[in-house]
Image (cartoon, rainbow, N blue to C red; front, side, top):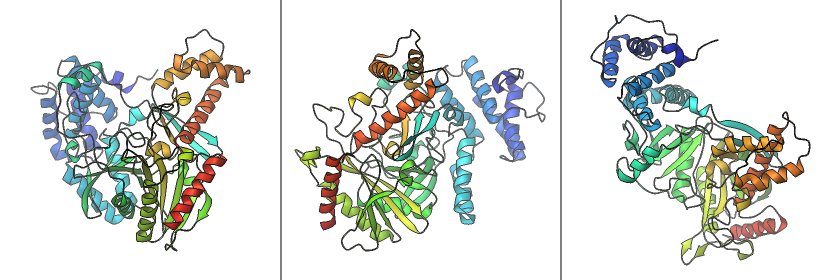
Length: 507
C-alpha cells in the first residue's frame, strides 16, 4: 500500500526535508542554484535550527513541495515554534513559502513581459505561480463538492464549499481582544507580504499585479479559495468603499480591454444584495463561463438615442437586462441610463420601493464580458428592502429555502454558481440515511424537507439517493435565485418588468 506524502517524509530527518524542499525549487528551475545555500539558511532560521546535521548534498526529490511544506509545519508544531491551530499553521506556512517566492517587483516584471508576448500567457503564468506558492489553496479547493443541475434556464452549477477552514475558537476569542487597523481590510494592497496574526491570515507569500484601471492604480490577484477557474480579484489602491455607479462600469470595461479573455463583475453596493466586503472598492473576474452567459435574450428592446446598443431581457430566474455594443462609450451611456432609471424606480404592486425615509433600496449587480468584437454588460436589478414577513430581505432567500442557503446572494450566485455552506456535507449525508429508512437524527432545519422528500420519493435506493438529494438541492438553489429576482417569472412579474422597460425607453 502506497504511503501518502507526509508519511513518507517521516522517514527523513528535518535536515533532509529542508534540503529536499529547497532542492525541489532548484531542480524545477524556480530558483538559481547559486541561491541554494542562502535559502537553506533562511529556512533554518525560521525553524529555529542552528545548523545542518547532515552533509548538504543533493537529495532525491520524491515528494511534492507541498508535501514537504506540510512536514516543515509539523516540525514547527512538534517543537513548540507555533501552536497547533489552523491560523498559526497557515501563517507559518506562508512564511516558509515566502522564502522561495520572488518579490513583487520580479513577479510584476515577469507578468508584463509575458503580457507583451500574449495576454493569456501572462494570466496563465500568474495563476500557476499563485497555486505553486500555495497562496491559492489547491488541496483545500479539491475537497469541494461540485456538480451541475439542469433547469429550464440551462445548467446551473452547485458547489458545497469545504475549502475554507473553520474559525478556531482561540482565534475568535483573540479577535475580540486584538483589534488592529493594519491592513485595513482583507482586500487592500497592504496585505502583500503581511505576516498575519490571530485575526488576519498569513499573506507573506501573497503577490499582487499592478495595473492601470481608468487612469488609477489598481491591483490584480487571485482568490485564495477560488470558486472557479482563475478566480480573480481587482482592488483599488485607494482605500474607499464600494460605489457601483457610472465609474464602476467604466472600470469594468477598462479591465476587459486589458484582459479580454476574462469576465469581470461587481457586487451591488448595498447591504443584503451586496457582497461580504463593501468597505473596499473591488471587483471579481476570471476565466470561467457561467450559466448566465449561456442564457438567451427573451425580449429585445431599443434604448432611445443609442442605435448601436442592442438591449434585451435575459431568460433567467433573476431580473437581468443585457446590453451589447462594439462601442464602449455607447455601452457606458446605456448602462448609466438603466442604472439611473432603476435607482429611482418604484412599483408597489411587486414590492419594489426605491427609497424608505431617504434610504436607497435599488441597486445593480453589473457583469461585463467580451463576445469577439462586442462588449457585453448584464445588469442584474436588485432591491434590499425587508418586511415583517421577510426580515432577511424581500428579495433574498425566503425562509423555506434557508436550510440550504441563507447567506446573501452575491455576484457569483447571481451568475448561476451556488456556493453552499460546509455544514451541508454532513447534514445531507444524514438526510440520505433518513431516506433509506435508517434511524438517524435529521437536523431540525431539514426535518420538514426530508419528510416531504420521503413521501415524494418512494423508490429510494442506495444507488439513487445521492442523485435524488443533489437534484432537490439544485431545485432549491433555483428557487433561491427566483426569490432574489425583483420581477418574478410569473405573469404579474413579467408585466411589471415591461412597465419598467416602458419607463426606461423614455429616459
